[in-house]
Image (cartoon, rainbow, N blue to C red; front, top):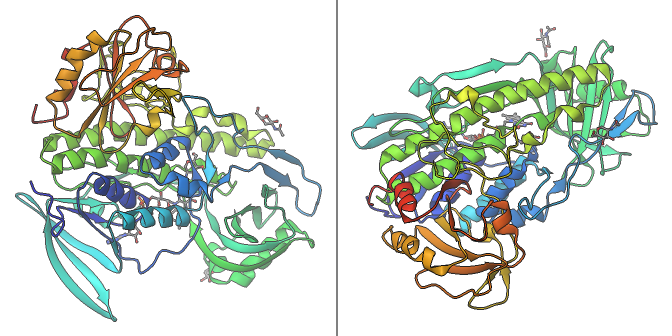
Amino acid sequence: MSADPASPGVLIGGAGPSGLVLALTLLTNGIPVRIIDKARDFPLVQRGSGIQPRTLELFHYLGTLSDMQAIYRPLLPVVEYKPGQVEPVKTSYMMEPVEPTPDVPYPNPILLGQGYTQQILRAHLEKLGGAIETETELRHFGQTADGVTVTLVKQRNGEEVIETASFRWLVGTDGGKSGVRKQLGLSFEGQALKEHSIHGELYVEGLDADHWHRWLDWQNPTIVTVVLCPTEVKGQFFFLTGGHVNYSELVEDQEKLLQAMRDFIKRDDIKLSNIRHAVEYRPQARIVEKYNLAVLMPAGFYKMPHTCTARREDRHGLNTSVQDAFNLGWKLALVEKGLAAPSLLSTYSEERLPVAKRMIQETLGIYKVVMDSALQGANASKARGAHIKQLGVNYRWSPIVLDERNPVDKQQTVDALDVYGKLGGDGVPRAGDRAPDAPGLVEVKQGSGATRLFDIFGPTHHCVLIFCADASTARPVLEAVQTLPPKTVTSVVIYPQTASRKPPVAYADLVLADFEGHAFKVYGCPADSTTIVITRPDGVIGGTVFGDEGVKKYFKGIFSTV
Ligand SMILES: Cc1cc2nc3c(=O)[nH]c(=O)nc-3n(C[C@H](O)[C@H](O)[C@H](O)COP(=O)(O)OP(=O)(O)OC[C@H]3O[C@@H](n4cnc5c(N)ncnc54)[C@H](O)[C@@H]3O)c2cc1C
Ligand SMILES: *[C@@H]1O[C@H](CO)[C@@H](O)[C@H](O)[C@H]1NC(C)=O
Ligand SMILES: *[C@@H]1O[C@H](CO)[C@@H](O)[C@H](O)[C@H]1NC(C)=O
Ligand SMILES: *[C@@H]1O[C@H](CO)[C@@H](O)[C@H](O)[C@H]1NC(C)=O
């Protein structure tokens, strides 16, 4: 297979968060892509604005996190009022902020409007030479023996221009209303929730920008809630409202909508004006039932439930679809490079579908608890376990992970698996788990300048971390790594904090000393024996093994060329 930039083998249909993350992952791997979107432009609307820690880590690997950090805001506490009263009823966090730890450097969800997230991803795409073809709609596609033929319809000067083109891969990242999914006849499982709301953005005077503000009155005959959340732009707030109202009428008549919200909150000291946009949102909790085909891979078909009790944080749409795209990206890159068999791609669905299914159960579960507690005035933050941060999401059952340290029974039914890592466990990471960070690693050769694992991991390569006291045990492992395709695996020898001698080792890409002792500790490796941890390009532990045989066995499951 060739990687000819003039004729990309991959078409990405839809430039939302999933399409952009997939495009960035592929371009970073040197795989040219075409990415299209039927939209003319991408307004800076909020949509989902909460981003979970696991998603932040992925943005770190893609190199986009620092740009996001420049503008994102922390999750703000929520002030709750009774209509007409200035004194708040209570102030609480939906999720209490916690301090970073060596293994979890980004422990708290943050807020960044989806429009801004996409803007930053687009800027990075352009830096890598990618460009979105806007006003270009994927209209039809058909499968051929070695790929897919598509019909693209472009709006050019008011006219439709039709293009037919062929690709090896089409990835449909075209969102909740996906035409790709429909044409493939894939079912969209789940349920449309009854709860219904209007959200958008408006201008607010007289409210501080350090909190979310929420009014609730379940007894009110019309609107029952208004939520106002500050955004990236001063004075501009995200709003959410709903109740026993005629939704389409309010969305159409913004003056009426403004007045209805004013009448509900009954606060002359707060001025609401100038609705920038307002949409009706009928929450859905759905996923595509099987999202992997040999040639066509629809990704990211999520629309998450979301409620008029203003639990904006209860939707995981972006988080999950972005993680889907990252999971698919490195695998597709290896297949396009001719280093892995197309069957590797089926593990995308095998790994992600149980996570997506569980996510929907979780969301519905949390939703119910939140609804109930809102009705009873209880503290809803209790409903939200730390697993919502998705740091425990794992693929321990995946056919391509290998755990020689704590083998699991992969025949268990998916329902029996702890997909979200809620059970906690003994603190020893398993193959299939998120690969933790560890700072304070010093290069033996230079003897100064510390690095951390998160700066060694990345979407272009696996890492073979050899935790060892004795360099001689590393040698056969490094020889095994030498036989793997070049530039796809980084070998890292890590000596314990306590090692008296830290000699350099031939063939290792990096030789580090664990000066602060974090790496051995969080990976559960004893200082007096050798443990090998293989991390994947998506920041997941692919294998924990004890020697060169284990390393070879793991990579036989990935590369077709070894
Ligand atoms: C009005 C609205 C409000 C939402 N609010 C929230 C929220 O508050 N919280 C939340 O978590 N989630 C929300 N969501 C869902 C959330 O935005 C999605 O989960 C998230 O955007 C998923 O990203 P995606 O890239 O998969 O899809 P999308 O962001 O939907 O991107 C799909 C892209 O594909 C393009 N496209 C579609 N069809 C074609 C075609 N045939 N050819 C070419 N391009 C095409 C679209 O123009 C779009 O740019 C909302 C969605 C909508 C529509
Ligand atoms: C809500 O619960 C959290 C976590 O238990 C607690 O820290 C907070 O103070 C509570 N808030 C209120 C208003 O009870
Ligand atoms: C809601 O308002 C629209 C006009 O915007 C009207 O056509 C429709 O009949 C109303 N629906 C109900 C149930 O009153
Ligand atoms: C991401 O997940 C968080 C927590 O569940 C949620 O608050 C947020 O709305 C989700 N964001 C998107 C865009 O789906």
